[in-house]
Length: 417
Image (cartoon, helix red, strand yellow):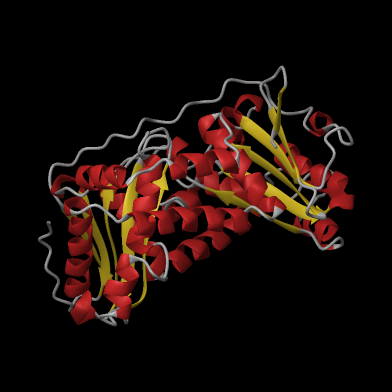
C-alpha cells in the first residue's frame, strides 16, 4: 500500500496509490514544531508556516500562489503541531504536476519578505486573540501548560504576542536553516497517481542537506493532583480533566485509545450518557487521547453551567474510578474497537487523510503501519489491558484539571479520586 524511497540526502518520498479516487494530495512535512523552540523564539514554527504562503521568486506574492491552485479548484493549507509542520495541496489527479510545483516552490524558495513579515504579525496577533477568546479551544492550551509547565511542551503553540512582534527576517532564515533539511523531511503523494509518472525528487533538488537540530526532551514531574483556573467572563465553565498517559512508542498506547473511546469517544459512551443524557449537564462532553514521541495524555473536556461544574467533574471522576475497579464487558470493548476501526476507514477514503496518515507516522516514528496492521493491534487489546491501563493512569499523582470560568464562580480547587 505504501511505497517509500529514501534518497541519498535523507529525503523520504512516500507514494500511496488509490484507485478509488480521482484526487491526489501532495503533503510535505518536516520534523519541526513548537517543541523544537526556545523561550525567545516560541511561536516561530507557526509564524514560519504562514510565511511560506507569502511569495517566492517564481510566484512573488500570496495571490500568485493561491490563484494557481484556485484555478483548478484545489484545496490547500498548512499546519503546525508540537512535533511537525506540514504544507499540502489536494487537486484533481490531472493537476498533480501543478500541486508538486507550487508546494515545492513554497517549501524551498519562500522569500520571507520583511514587509510581509510585518504585515503578518498583525494576522497572527489576531489569531492568538481568537484562540484566547474561544474558551472551548483555549482550555486545551491551559491543560498542556498545567501538564508541562515552563518548557516547550507547555507553551502556547502560536507563541506570545511579544515574541510575534519581535521576530525579524533573520530569525526565520536561521530557524529554517537549522530545522528544514532533507534528513527530517517527508514528501507524501497520495491518491490517483502512478509513482513512475512524476519524478518527485526533481521538484526538491534544492533542499538543504544538513544535520537538523534536535528538540529538547520533555521533563515530567508530578506527585499530586494539580489545578489551573483561568478567569474570564464566559457563559459556561469549560474544563479539561485528565491524566498523564503514554507516548507513541508505548505498548499500551492502543489500550489507552480504546479507553478514551469507551469513556467519551461516541454518543453511546459512558460520559456522554452519564453527563449529558442522564443529567443534562453539558451540550458537549468528550474524551480523547493524545500521543507524541515523548508525551501522552487522556483528557475529558466539557462546557457546563457554572454552578454545575463541580457535579460534572465528580461524575467524570466516578466513571474513571469504575474503569479501575471493574473490567469492561466484552460487548463494550468490541463496540469501542469497531468504532475506532470504522471511523478510520471512513476517514481514509480521502487522499488528504491518507497522506496525513502515512506522513505523520513516518515523521514521528519512521515506520508506517497499514490500516490493517493498526486494526490488528486494536483487536488484540483485552478487557484486562483496559483495566491495567486504567489502574496505571487514573491516580491522584497523574490527575490534572484546567478550568476557564468567571472570577465570581466559586470553584473547589481540591481534586482527587
